Length: 255
View 1 (cartoon, rainbow, N blue to C red):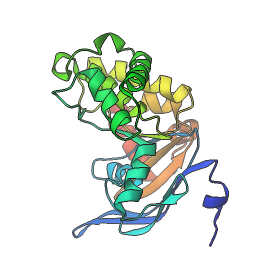
View 2: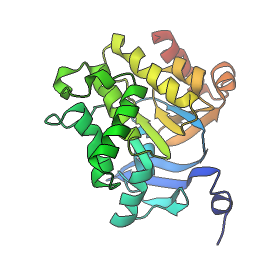
View 3: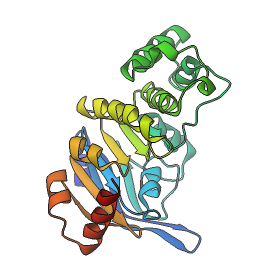
């Protein structure tokens, strides 16, 4: 049966419909529904254990949902290795930890997947890698190894590596949480540039200044549910639920 999801595939990148996820007896996602339009920038926040990371990991199949429906770029996710590989080629993800290969240079980290998965020649892959390393302002470090870089530099390499696959959607799972405070700004600046270039983004973060500046929507999750969402001006200034009011008072006070 056709739905608005399929009929508007050109405009809609992700649809989640009543998604449920358990880890054993722990009910992590409870009836989560979400639609993401192409070019939209969404920030997801909430307390620890609210299901934020699990939700975005389900979008690229790193976690398989138990009930409900997830459609990414017109393809419904299911437990099919070939389908999951196809989806992951179109969905870039940047984690809390940088996950760079320590035995490969920055350039080699960025060219590996385009060569192995996309079938690019070494010359084409290196040209693309240098383009994206320049975009995240770290091209001068291309011949170094990850251990020779700061945490902020490593995270920028991780972003460039994801971009080298030219994904249609970028997912960020608390990309600044493992960084020293002075390194957070350099990573956020790169993400702001990506957002302003029109990249479709879902970002789990507590960086509320980033959310206010670039988000089209901010989503608040708690206990596996989407409690409230809206544009930043409404989300931060006119919260409806008492739970969101408490969360904002705590996190903005810490900031």
